[in-house]
Image (tube, rainbow, N blue to C red; front, top):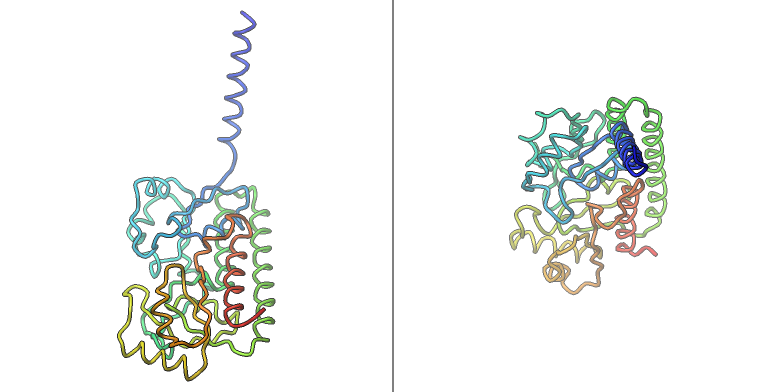
Length: 299
Protein backbone atom coordinates (compact mmCIF):
# COMPACT_ATOMS: atom_id res chain seq x y z
CA UNK A 1 0.00 0.00 0.00
CA UNK A 2 1.48 3.36 -1.02
CA UNK A 3 2.33 6.05 1.52
CA UNK A 4 0.04 8.57 -0.19
CA UNK A 5 -2.90 6.15 -0.10
CA UNK A 6 -2.33 5.57 3.62
CA UNK A 7 -2.38 9.31 4.21
CA UNK A 8 -5.68 9.58 2.36
CA UNK A 9 -7.17 6.85 4.54
CA UNK A 10 -5.86 8.55 7.66
CA UNK A 11 -7.36 11.87 6.56
CA UNK A 12 -10.72 10.26 5.84
CA UNK A 13 -10.66 8.51 9.19
CA UNK A 14 -9.98 11.76 11.03
CA UNK A 15 -12.70 13.54 9.07
CA UNK A 16 -15.27 10.85 9.76
CA UNK A 17 -14.25 10.72 13.39
CA UNK A 18 -14.67 14.47 13.90
CA UNK A 19 -18.03 14.35 12.11
CA UNK A 20 -19.18 11.55 14.38
CA UNK A 21 -18.10 13.56 17.39
CA UNK A 22 -20.18 16.52 16.23
CA UNK A 23 -23.16 14.31 15.49
CA UNK A 24 -22.87 12.77 18.92
CA UNK A 25 -22.77 16.10 20.72
CA UNK A 26 -25.88 16.66 22.82
CA UNK A 27 -26.59 20.12 21.39
CA UNK A 28 -30.27 20.99 21.63
CA UNK A 29 -32.04 23.02 18.95
CA UNK A 30 -34.44 25.74 20.09
CA UNK A 31 -36.61 27.89 17.82
CA UNK A 32 -37.88 31.05 19.55
CA UNK A 33 -40.56 33.11 17.88
CA UNK A 34 -39.15 36.58 18.64
CA UNK A 35 -35.80 38.04 19.65
CA UNK A 36 -36.50 38.64 23.39
CA UNK A 37 -37.46 34.98 23.82
CA UNK A 38 -34.44 33.89 21.79
CA UNK A 39 -32.25 35.92 24.14
CA UNK A 40 -33.75 34.14 27.16
CA UNK A 41 -32.96 30.85 25.42
CA UNK A 42 -29.37 31.98 24.92
CA UNK A 43 -29.09 32.88 28.60
CA UNK A 44 -30.38 29.50 29.79
CA UNK A 45 -28.88 27.22 27.17
CA UNK A 46 -25.47 28.82 26.80
CA UNK A 47 -23.16 27.15 24.29
CA UNK A 48 -24.97 23.83 24.59
CA UNK A 49 -28.05 25.13 22.77
CA UNK A 50 -28.50 26.19 19.17
CA UNK A 51 -31.01 29.04 19.16
CA UNK A 52 -32.84 30.25 16.06
CA UNK A 53 -35.05 33.34 16.00
CA UNK A 54 -38.10 32.76 13.83
CA UNK A 55 -39.43 36.27 13.08
CA UNK A 56 -36.71 38.47 11.57
CA UNK A 57 -35.87 41.79 13.19
CA UNK A 58 -38.04 44.60 11.91
CA UNK A 59 -40.83 42.26 10.79
CA UNK A 60 -44.26 42.32 12.42
CA UNK A 61 -44.81 39.22 14.52
CA UNK A 62 -48.58 39.73 14.49
CA UNK A 63 -49.02 38.71 10.87
CA UNK A 64 -45.72 37.13 9.84
CA UNK A 65 -45.92 34.71 6.91
CA UNK A 66 -43.98 31.49 7.48
CA UNK A 67 -41.45 30.60 4.80
CA UNK A 68 -40.75 26.99 3.76
CA UNK A 69 -37.42 27.18 5.62
CA UNK A 70 -39.27 28.26 8.77
CA UNK A 71 -41.53 25.22 8.57
CA UNK A 72 -38.51 22.96 8.20
CA UNK A 73 -36.90 24.53 11.29
CA UNK A 74 -40.07 24.13 13.32
CA UNK A 75 -40.53 20.51 12.31
CA UNK A 76 -36.92 19.55 13.03
CA UNK A 77 -36.22 21.41 16.25
CA UNK A 78 -36.20 20.05 19.81
CA UNK A 79 -38.00 22.92 21.55
CA UNK A 80 -40.26 25.70 20.30
CA UNK A 81 -40.65 28.77 22.51
CA UNK A 82 -43.32 31.33 21.60
CA UNK A 83 -45.16 34.11 23.41
CA UNK A 84 -48.60 32.68 22.61
CA UNK A 85 -51.67 33.28 20.45
CA UNK A 86 -52.24 36.78 21.81
CA UNK A 87 -49.05 37.91 20.10
CA UNK A 88 -48.24 35.40 17.35
CA UNK A 89 -51.51 34.30 15.82
CA UNK A 90 -49.74 33.12 12.67
CA UNK A 91 -48.32 30.15 14.63
CA UNK A 92 -51.57 28.87 16.10
CA UNK A 93 -52.27 26.31 13.37
CA UNK A 94 -48.65 25.33 12.86
CA UNK A 95 -47.49 24.28 16.30
CA UNK A 96 -48.26 21.10 18.19
CA UNK A 97 -48.03 18.56 15.40
CA UNK A 98 -44.24 17.99 15.42
CA UNK A 99 -41.87 16.25 17.81
CA UNK A 100 -40.72 19.47 19.49
CA UNK A 101 -41.47 20.30 23.09
CA UNK A 102 -43.74 23.35 22.97
CA UNK A 103 -43.43 26.21 25.48
CA UNK A 104 -46.28 28.72 25.28
CA UNK A 105 -45.23 31.58 27.53
CA UNK A 106 -48.74 32.97 27.75
CA UNK A 107 -49.99 29.71 29.30
CA UNK A 108 -47.18 28.98 31.77
CA UNK A 109 -48.14 28.71 35.46
CA UNK A 110 -46.90 31.82 37.23
CA UNK A 111 -46.98 34.11 34.19
CA UNK A 112 -48.52 37.48 34.99
CA UNK A 113 -50.92 38.59 32.26
CA UNK A 114 -52.56 41.99 31.83
CA UNK A 115 -55.58 42.91 29.80
CA UNK A 116 -55.20 45.53 27.12
CA UNK A 117 -56.05 49.06 28.21
CA UNK A 118 -58.31 51.71 26.75
CA UNK A 119 -56.61 54.44 24.77
CA UNK A 120 -57.07 56.83 27.68
CA UNK A 121 -55.42 54.31 30.00
CA UNK A 122 -58.28 54.51 32.46
CA UNK A 123 -59.90 51.10 31.94
CA UNK A 124 -59.05 47.55 30.95
CA UNK A 125 -60.66 45.88 27.95
CA UNK A 126 -62.42 42.68 29.14
CA UNK A 127 -61.51 39.46 27.35
CA UNK A 128 -58.24 40.78 25.96
CA UNK A 129 -54.58 40.02 26.68
CA UNK A 130 -51.76 42.53 26.35
CA UNK A 131 -49.27 40.39 24.40
CA UNK A 132 -46.02 42.12 25.48
CA UNK A 133 -45.57 39.76 28.43
CA UNK A 134 -41.78 39.37 27.96
CA UNK A 135 -41.21 42.92 29.28
CA UNK A 136 -41.98 41.79 32.83
CA UNK A 137 -38.73 40.62 34.43
CA UNK A 138 -40.64 38.17 36.62
CA UNK A 139 -42.33 36.69 33.56
CA UNK A 140 -38.91 36.32 31.95
CA UNK A 141 -37.78 34.26 34.95
CA UNK A 142 -40.85 32.00 34.66
CA UNK A 143 -40.02 31.47 30.98
CA UNK A 144 -36.36 30.77 31.78
CA UNK A 145 -37.26 28.14 34.37
CA UNK A 146 -39.73 26.45 32.01
CA UNK A 147 -37.10 26.41 29.29
CA UNK A 148 -34.52 24.93 31.67
CA UNK A 149 -37.00 22.14 32.47
CA UNK A 150 -37.50 21.44 28.76
CA UNK A 151 -33.75 21.43 28.11
CA UNK A 152 -33.23 18.97 30.95
CA UNK A 153 -35.75 16.63 29.31
CA UNK A 154 -33.89 16.83 26.01
CA UNK A 155 -30.36 16.83 27.46
CA UNK A 156 -30.40 15.40 31.01
CA UNK A 157 -26.61 15.02 31.10
CA UNK A 158 -26.30 18.80 31.40
CA UNK A 159 -29.20 19.42 33.78
CA UNK A 160 -26.97 21.17 36.33
CA UNK A 161 -25.77 23.65 33.69
CA UNK A 162 -29.28 24.62 32.62
CA UNK A 163 -30.49 24.96 36.22
CA UNK A 164 -27.46 27.06 37.09
CA UNK A 165 -27.93 29.34 34.10
CA UNK A 166 -31.62 29.84 34.89
CA UNK A 167 -30.78 30.69 38.51
CA UNK A 168 -28.14 33.21 37.39
CA UNK A 169 -30.66 34.76 35.00
CA UNK A 170 -33.21 35.08 37.81
CA UNK A 171 -30.61 36.78 40.03
CA UNK A 172 -29.88 39.32 37.29
CA UNK A 173 -33.57 40.07 36.92
CA UNK A 174 -33.86 40.69 40.67
CA UNK A 175 -30.90 43.05 40.48
CA UNK A 176 -32.45 44.85 37.51
CA UNK A 177 -35.67 45.50 39.39
CA UNK A 178 -33.91 46.65 42.56
CA UNK A 179 -31.51 48.94 40.72
CA UNK A 180 -34.19 50.66 38.66
CA UNK A 181 -36.76 50.94 41.43
CA UNK A 182 -34.29 53.05 43.39
CA UNK A 183 -33.22 55.40 40.63
CA UNK A 184 -36.71 55.96 39.21
CA UNK A 185 -38.04 56.68 42.70
CA UNK A 186 -35.82 59.77 42.81
CA UNK A 187 -37.40 61.32 39.71
CA UNK A 188 -39.83 64.19 40.39
CA UNK A 189 -42.34 62.96 37.78
CA UNK A 190 -42.97 59.57 36.23
CA UNK A 191 -46.03 60.21 34.06
CA UNK A 192 -45.67 59.05 30.45
CA UNK A 193 -47.72 58.96 27.28
CA UNK A 194 -47.11 56.21 24.75
CA UNK A 195 -47.33 56.49 21.00
CA UNK A 196 -49.02 53.10 21.24
CA UNK A 197 -49.58 51.09 24.40
CA UNK A 198 -46.79 48.48 24.51
CA UNK A 199 -44.99 48.95 27.84
CA UNK A 200 -47.53 47.92 30.49
CA UNK A 201 -45.46 44.97 31.70
CA UNK A 202 -42.40 47.15 32.33
CA UNK A 203 -44.19 50.01 34.09
CA UNK A 204 -44.41 48.51 37.63
CA UNK A 205 -40.65 47.87 37.80
CA UNK A 206 -40.00 51.52 36.97
CA UNK A 207 -42.90 53.05 38.88
CA UNK A 208 -44.33 54.71 35.76
CA UNK A 209 -47.75 56.38 35.52
CA UNK A 210 -49.31 55.59 32.17
CA UNK A 211 -51.55 58.43 31.00
CA UNK A 212 -52.74 57.11 27.66
CA UNK A 213 -51.64 56.45 24.09
CA UNK A 214 -51.91 58.46 20.91
CA UNK A 215 -52.60 55.66 18.44
CA UNK A 216 -53.93 52.14 18.12
CA UNK A 217 -51.06 49.86 17.15
CA UNK A 218 -52.95 47.61 14.73
CA UNK A 219 -55.45 50.10 13.36
CA UNK A 220 -53.29 53.21 13.01
CA UNK A 221 -54.46 56.64 14.05
CA UNK A 222 -57.38 57.31 16.35
CA UNK A 223 -60.18 59.81 15.95
CA UNK A 224 -59.93 63.56 16.43
CA UNK A 225 -61.84 63.42 19.71
CA UNK A 226 -59.31 61.14 21.38
CA UNK A 227 -56.41 63.12 19.95
CA UNK A 228 -57.77 66.35 21.43
CA UNK A 229 -58.38 64.64 24.78
CA UNK A 230 -54.79 63.43 24.95
CA UNK A 231 -53.39 66.79 23.86
CA UNK A 232 -55.38 68.52 26.60
CA UNK A 233 -54.24 65.99 29.19
CA UNK A 234 -50.60 66.51 28.21
CA UNK A 235 -50.99 70.26 28.75
CA UNK A 236 -53.03 70.04 31.97
CA UNK A 237 -50.74 67.52 33.65
CA UNK A 238 -47.47 68.89 32.34
CA UNK A 239 -46.46 65.59 30.71
CA UNK A 240 -43.16 65.85 28.88
CA UNK A 241 -42.24 62.25 27.95
CA UNK A 242 -43.55 60.27 25.00
CA UNK A 243 -42.58 56.62 24.60
CA UNK A 244 -42.40 55.88 20.89
CA UNK A 245 -40.83 53.31 18.61
CA UNK A 246 -38.68 53.48 15.48
CA UNK A 247 -40.59 54.97 12.56
CA UNK A 248 -43.30 56.72 14.60
CA UNK A 249 -45.09 59.78 13.20
CA UNK A 250 -43.13 62.57 14.89
CA UNK A 251 -45.25 65.32 13.30
CA UNK A 252 -48.38 63.79 14.84
CA UNK A 253 -46.67 63.59 18.24
CA UNK A 254 -45.58 67.23 18.09
CA UNK A 255 -49.13 68.30 17.34
CA UNK A 256 -50.30 66.37 20.40
CA UNK A 257 -47.77 68.16 22.61
CA UNK A 258 -48.80 71.50 21.05
CA UNK A 259 -45.45 73.26 21.38
CA UNK A 260 -44.70 71.95 24.85
CA UNK A 261 -41.03 71.17 25.47
CA UNK A 262 -40.94 67.39 25.49
CA UNK A 263 -38.73 64.38 25.00
CA UNK A 264 -39.69 61.73 22.46
CA UNK A 265 -37.72 58.57 23.12
CA UNK A 266 -37.57 55.53 20.88
CA UNK A 267 -38.12 52.44 23.03
CA UNK A 268 -37.30 49.10 21.43
CA UNK A 269 -39.44 46.40 23.00
CA UNK A 270 -37.93 43.75 20.69
CA UNK A 271 -34.30 44.33 21.78
CA UNK A 272 -33.05 44.56 18.20
CA UNK A 273 -29.95 46.64 19.03
CA UNK A 274 -28.49 44.45 21.79
CA UNK A 275 -25.94 41.63 21.31
CA UNK A 276 -27.31 38.17 20.70
CA UNK A 277 -25.64 36.56 23.69
CA UNK A 278 -26.32 35.23 27.18
CA UNK A 279 -26.85 38.70 28.66
CA UNK A 280 -28.73 40.19 25.73
CA UNK A 281 -32.14 40.02 27.40
CA UNK A 282 -30.88 41.94 30.42
CA UNK A 283 -29.21 44.45 28.08
CA UNK A 284 -32.50 44.93 26.23
CA UNK A 285 -34.47 45.68 29.39
CA UNK A 286 -31.70 47.97 30.64
CA UNK A 287 -31.62 49.84 27.34
CA UNK A 288 -35.37 50.44 27.61
CA UNK A 289 -35.12 51.56 31.24
CA UNK A 290 -32.26 53.93 30.44
CA UNK A 291 -34.15 55.51 27.53
CA UNK A 292 -37.26 56.07 29.67
CA UNK A 293 -35.17 57.41 32.57
CA UNK A 294 -33.58 60.06 30.36
CA UNK A 295 -36.97 60.85 28.76
CA UNK A 296 -38.26 61.69 32.26
CA UNK A 297 -35.35 64.01 32.91
CA UNK A 298 -32.96 61.67 34.68
CA UNK A 299 -29.24 62.15 34.22
